[in-house]
Length: 354
Ligand code: NAD
Image (cartoon, rainbow, N blue to C red; front, side):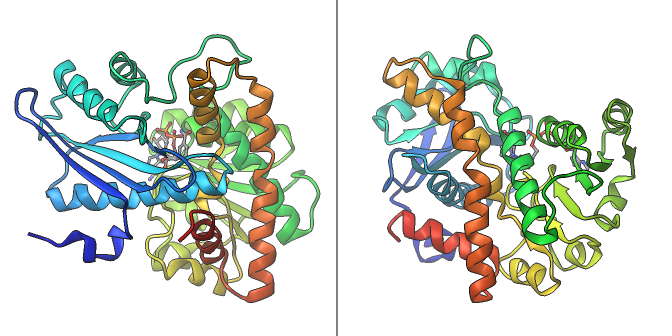
C-alpha cells in the first residue's frame, strides 16, 4: 500500500476519508487539507480514474488548492475536496448521491461541498436534500449571491486583467489592448464580453468552433484554431479552458506580456512559474484571479446558514478586492525577484498557519 502521507501531495492534510458503500456502489474520497480559517470548502468531482492513486492525488491537490484559494479570497473557509470514483460507464445513481450526502452530513460541517466537474446543479440539489453542508445552490432573483459562479468568476478575471495591464504596461484602460482568450465557455465568454465593452481587441479560440464563431460575431472579434491561440502575438493571453497548459512547450510558444485567466492549475509543474517570469511575462496566479465564483457561492452558503439575506453588492465588493491582492503579489515579486506564483503560495500558506 502506498504511504500517501509521506508524499509531497499529502502536505499534512488534516483528514482524508475513504468512502465505500457497497449497497449503492459509491466509492469516494473526501480530503480536508485545512480547517484553520473555517470549514473545508470545495466541490465534488465525479470522474472515471484509470487508477485509484490518480483519484487520491486529484483529491489531495484540489483540496490544497481550495485552502489557498479560499484563504487568498479572504473567506472564512478552509480547503477540502471530494472525488467520487466513477466506473467506466460513469454510472451515477440517486442512491449513490444519497450515500455521499450522508457521509458529508456525518462530517458535521467540517466539509462543505459544491458542484465540480461531472456534478450538475440537479445532483447538488439532491445532495442538499440530505445535508445542509452544500454551497452553490440555485438562487432566486438577480440581486442574491450564489447560483451560477461563472459570471462572478469572469468579473474577477476582468478586473485582474485590468490590474495586470496597469502593472505591466502602465495603461489605465483596455482600449486597444489585445487579449487572446482560450476557451469561450461560461468564464471565457464572460471575460470576453466585459473586455469588449471596455474597448479591448480580442482573439478567441475554442474547440467548439460554433461557440467561438457565435461569440466572435457578437463581439466583432476573431477566432483562431485551438492550436494557434497560445502563440498569437498579443498583450494578454487569458487561459479559460484547460489546466496544465503552461509547460516548457506552452510557455515557449507564448508571444505576450501577461498571462491572466481563470483556468485552474495553469502551471503544469512548480518550475513553470519561474520560467514565465524569466521570459518577462507577468503571471496572475490562477487561484487568486479566479476566486470570484467561490466568493459568491461561499457568501450564499454563509447567508443561508445564518438565515440572513445575502446582498449581491457584498459579493461585488469582495470581488473588487482581487486586483489589490494581485498587485500586492506582483509588488512583492518585483521587490524580491521571486516569481508571483511562489509569492502567492507563501502568502496563502501563512494565512492558513503553515
Ligand atoms: P466551460 O465548460 O463553460 O467552458 C470551457 C470552454 O473551453 C468550453 O467552451 C470548451 O469547449 C473550451 N475548451 C476546452 N478545451 C479547449 C482547448 N483546448 N482550446 C480551446 N478551448 C477549449 O467551463 P468554465 O466554467 O468556463 O471553466 C473554464 C475554466 O475555468 C476551467 O478550467 C475551470 O476549472 C475554471 N474555473 C471555472 C470557474 C467557474 O466559476 N465556472 C471558477 C474557477 C475556475
